[in-house]
Image (cartoon, rainbow over all chains, first blue to last red; front, top):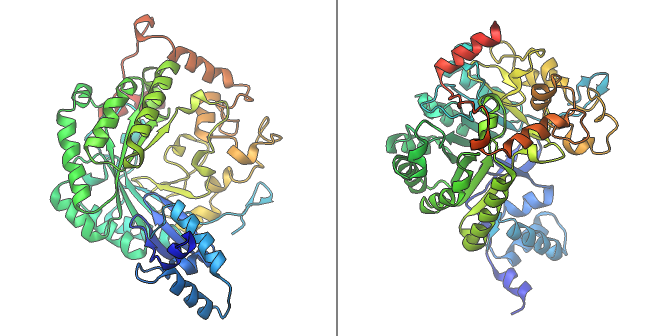
Length: 92
Length: 384
């Protein structure tokens, strides 16, 4: 199984250290953690809010493509999830 | 929003960080405390209802992180009620505490109220310095608080203020944090404001002490890996460029003091020529966007030389207004930590004095402990 295949079948979830929240004043999704905040851009927010620890990344991509009536999101989603893992926001 | 500051429009975002200093009362007497030296002369504390209104107003203005601090915030018995309201409003709630008064009952009540995080500080510079260093009473107290933090599922974040008197015991401090099961440890050198400024000569470590402490910290980082993440903050006097204080004046940070004064940072009240607004007679939104005090040092039109034409001015915004005031007499000057400041020598002098061993100092000033008697004494000197 290639690295990408392993990621596609993984079921990531938001790390317990972080809380995802929509901020009306900022018009953005943010991640809150002890004494800190990460402001997410639109697509990052759409990805993270869909993570539930049950859905595979393949299913996540399919859902995003359906909701936004588009195709070919795999590369962008995988790239973002890699960053999210590195930052410790998301656990596989 | 874009208020006009000194004739220039400045874009201002929301006050993302609300620090609620709900009381100056504290069972401790830390010599590095950043509460104002004249804290005993401030007005009466806001009532529960007034604090609840502050929380609602600040949240509506876009505040999202809320720190409950002091003094010791556990001294107020309405803390749980305030945390519950903050949680309900959607704040991420942080409690900054020494752990004194943190009982199993209160921990549970705070958890039920929705408290998200507890930052436990070691207070080592009480009159019981030896207890701290020998891990006796302090350890028992911290262990109890740490167990409550863990059993309630909060992340374990420890903070220890480092200074000349405890920096040589940094290995013990790190081991204490390991023993307590900490995930994060902040080793923050004392910053020289308020009580710490009074005690600066006694608190500033020598370069040799600092280097050793950093070396020891790095050894532990290597040994402990992900088990404990350690942050080490050096005193800015040892730098040649100032810190971007509070990430900019009136940029993200809003402090409300026990009597309801609104400040861009917890020590700003020392800037006497500014009239800081009070939440009792102005809304948080107006304070943040409209008040003269919050607009005063926004943008860069207020800057003098060398800041005004400095290519790095956006990077540090001229450093800290309070430090500029304390060390140069004018809050609009460059923070003299900057080696471009004509007052940089004052910083170099303080650093030079820090290299003199205590035994070779001609006059060793006794440390001034933060307590009501000293506060009243020092306030009467300032007023005279």
